[in-house]
Length: 504
Ligand SMILES: Cc1cc2nc3c(=O)[nH]c(=O)nc-3n(C[C@H](O)[C@H](O)[C@H](O)COP(=O)(O)OP(=O)(O)OC[C@H]3O[C@@H](n4cnc5c(N)ncnc54)[C@H](O)[C@@H]3O)c2cc1C
Image (cartoon, rainbow, N blue to C red; front, side):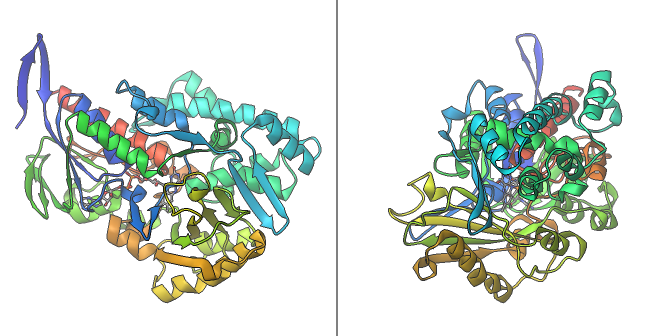
């Protein structure tokens, strides 16, 4: 039931809004809905908030379970600024220098310094003339970033007409939307290591660089110019900060509550069935996995898409993760380490073309205890090791285990020291866990890939096309995968729901 109040000659509708899911998209949606004066309840099936960015503690270690790269700091600042706050009110950010390293072989690494002058020297040392090319590349990347942020990502993407403004069209064309990241990068750099470095940031978007529009080299601007940051205490500090803000705005959090059905009355969402009882509502933002919400919670006639639609989509990879505690310091690791010491094409083929468990995969190691002494006991290292794998593979403990020794050997070989015997904590996480913990379709980790055919209006819609008071948020709708896009989708979904409520 909608409550109509007359305050200072303004009609304010205080609607009851439910948000399903406490990932970044749900948290952002809750904050914006509460700011409009609505009565907001956030429902989360897990006992802790943060969605894929939850943490767990064991044996003196605190592990971030999902995201570890803090890029696009302006998106977080922009979010908090809309509530008169700044990220610094909730967590302390440290810029990493070097930002990250890519390991091609035992004595073959590229470290990415925070300073542009030093980065240019790194490039020039690898390929003569590449410093000037880097400058030009990053100038264009900055342009794309600005066009993307100003004119594209904050749109609901209901229609191409939203982009039908001459400046936006010019910006999109100038941003090389129709060529791939791969061909664009290769038009600048020849050395395969520089190519790998410049293609790496778009791996976050869930597909190979030859399938991602060159518009997304905007990510290089964030990685190489804005820099790589870390919130002290871990990535969980962002979600905790957003929760603190949401609570201050009046949002009610209910964890351990599994939504089992979305009820519809007279063509509108009217309530939810949950594991702890029924909830009546005036508006809904479903910020859990889109496929799960449609296929499991909504009656078929109200779904935007069929199950065949989802089968045809290109999903970003899932991943095999090891959370590892080591009882000694490991000298040569940095905070972010990408082990590109294997055949990239072959691994990519095992993810995208012929989905299967890879033979000798590339992997990523985050060692946040290099920056933060609160997340591991003194003198020890906290490791997060991630191997990208295809979604939907058969996942069992034996398969997970089969990679561990080989990965540790490759790390020991690079680091020039042994530490296998010093592993005092280990937990694995993979496809099955993504399904069980987050209702993730086929155990996807990062949502849908940002291919050209899955960009903007071509992504699963942010609104339910029949139920006018229901919107979707999260990494499976616009603008796409990653923490900053998830956060943006929550804002846009909330704005759209509010527009609908204001019309009543
Ligand atoms: C291992 C990993 C590493 C990553 N690394 C990075 C990184 O370094 N940088 C980056 O920017 N991004 C990274 N990402 C991507 C980023 O974490 C996600 O895109 C983002 O967190 C998704 O947020 P979300 O709100 O869309 O979804 P989620 O975080 O999945 O939140 C959805 C929530 O809905 C809940 N839910 C589901 N079904 C129900 C139900 N029926 N009832 C109630 N609640 C329900 C789930 O439990 C979950 O908490 C990573 C992701 C993973 C998995």
